[in-house]
Image 1 (cartoon, rainbow, N blue to C red):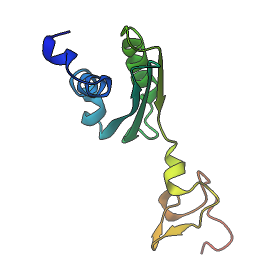
Image 2 (image 1 turned 180 degrees about the horizontal axis):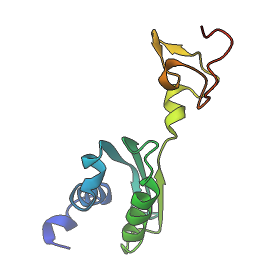
Image 3 (image 1 turned 45 degrees about the vertical axis):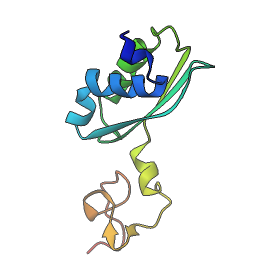
Length: 121
């Protein structure tokens, strides 16, 4: 660790590492945010969003992040949250339209259903 890195907070160093070593997150339209980086407890919480929601390789990305950060002497626990894409839409219980935008798959039916329903012409 360089002298200038030693002057940075744990959160800043984790953010810098993410930007430098995990460019694939942003390249695929994803976002990352360090929500917590407590040097006293060694707990780091990172949240991935944007294109990471529902991405088929997000498990690989989170595994790579965890594998590296847990090797840092000041980090004891790494938690990475990747929100379920349905959470941001309110899940299947939410009304089918948000501000006039039909959010069902293809605008034809229920979540993942190939049956358009009784109201379909």
